[in-house]
Image (cartoon, rainbow, N blue to C red; front, side, top):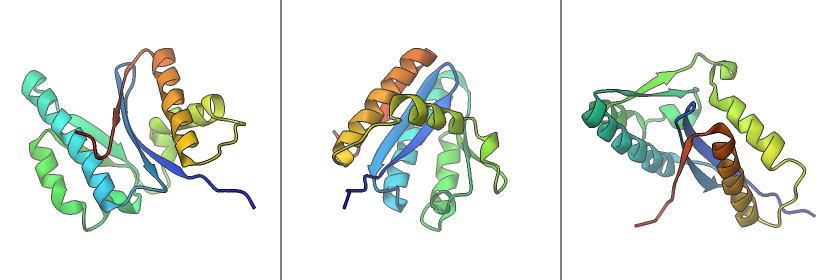
Length: 147
């Protein structure tokens, strides 16, 4: 019986400029999602202070994006310059990042077998680096439990 590897990726892509992302074994849950979004909100606060520009994050209606644990943080994020825009249900085609995920899967990790989640995560990280070089944008990965 084969091992099922599962890595989830959460990303924020600003075409031709920046791609921020985080990886989680299995999937993102409330606390891990909040940590990543707080990181993005902190970056949005810097952008707002330096340029006066707001940061808008386009999201689908995944349960983690709208759960009761997350909703109380929306107002704080707004004060930091991070606004959330929710797509209508069943509108993944409107979210441009979906094309990036497709490219990552189709070109950087397609057809490969992985021993475990660690090897899969390394391949995704390497694939993201290749995509950023190909796309000419900066890349930054959020690392859980790092100083």
